[in-house]
Amino acid sequence: MNLISKKDLLAITGISYGQLYRWKRERLIPEEWFIKQSAYTGQETFFPREQILSRIKSILELKDNYSLEELSKILSPETSIAKISINDLQDMNEIDKGLLNIMPQVYGKDEYDFFDIAFIIAISKAAKKISLSDDQCEGLLRKSISAASRQKSTNVSCTFFYTGSEYHTVFSPNSAPIIFDDDIEVLEQLSISEIADTIKIKYKNRFVH
Amino acid sequence: MQNINLEGIGTISGGEYDTINVEGVGSCTNNIKAENIHIEGVFNCAGEMEAGLLYCEGVANFKSNIRARKINVEGVLSVKDDYKIEAEEIICEGIIKTGGEISADIIKADGCIAAKDIVGDQIIINSRYHANRIINFFTRIKSEVKLIEATTIELRGVTADTVNGRDITIGPNCRIDNIDCNGFLFIDKNSSVGTITGNYTMR
Image 1 (cartoon, helix red, strand yellow):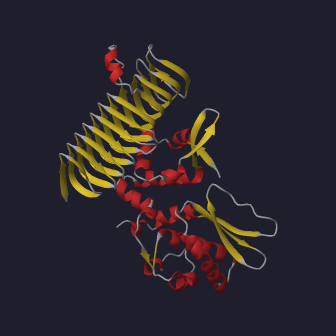
Image 2 (cartoon, rainbow over the protein chains, first blue to last red):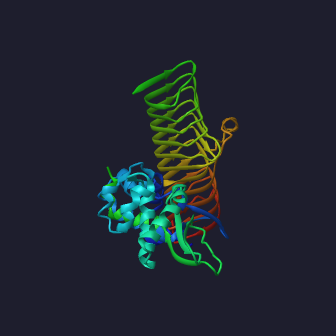
Image 3 (cartoon, rainbow over the protein chains, first blue to last red):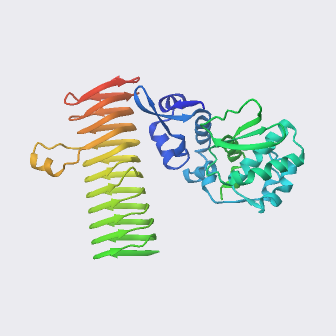
């Protein structure tokens, strides 16, 4: 995983320590992103590079129009318990239409939390990339639901792979890349948190009540 | 919402309150949230605390995280292990001690503040090491921190491993191992500093 040091981050973005720590306190920047590692100078803090740069860009763009509390709801809706109904998902073109239709039946509910939505978009992207049939999509979703529901945060990646006879999903922490043997064909590897960040901004009004 | 006035010895159950006044000896085993918390006696809290204003003139011992808008300590506020203290403003004329992080926009300590990390926007720690040895005996806790990181920092009587900031003023009686400064830096001749890095202008 590509990391950036705290010092470099402040230098590149031009933000101050005060801003960084205020945003951490307001949960606009998740605590898990502060990664402590030993460097030759002692303990230094690093961040996942693409995620932190994208998050700070979002905060700087939105902070003049929203309060910190509203920003927290927009940027960290996974911490809110708000659910989105199936009707509100109809116009999200990131979600494959076939999947959208079977979601209530497969999930057994018609209101979804933030992780559910990010994961459905991940499967939709993979399905589009490798041209999965509706049946194959449904099969993949069904077998992934239990693992997906056990994820505690969006700070994970999901890898779709093919064993030669079946399609599968695996979830892993963003910081730990998965390496398969030669018989496995990796179809797509997506960061749930990156998908989450994109839809948070694009559909922000749905998450701010 | 409820107000609680505790003058004897008692337990406060967790929950949400308007004002909590502890003049006696109080304890709480659950998470507690209040607009105003005033501790004049002794308060032991095992749960998380969330407050508007936390004012401690007495002794408060916490076994979990504290989150408040403003924290004012004239007595002793101690947090166990590496739980954290988060606030917008912290004023300390007494003693604040934690093994974890203290994070606030403004931290002004005329007393003692000891933590693993102290971070924020403006940090001013003015710990006096008295010439009078009897006072030093009673204030045995020194301002000792591993890392201080803020936009502007002013320190007196502080021992720290690392101080990182934009504008840093190291006053007398400080011992700092590493400084990284990217603005203005002043170091008193009565302080000892190890390495200095960064793009700074010496004052």
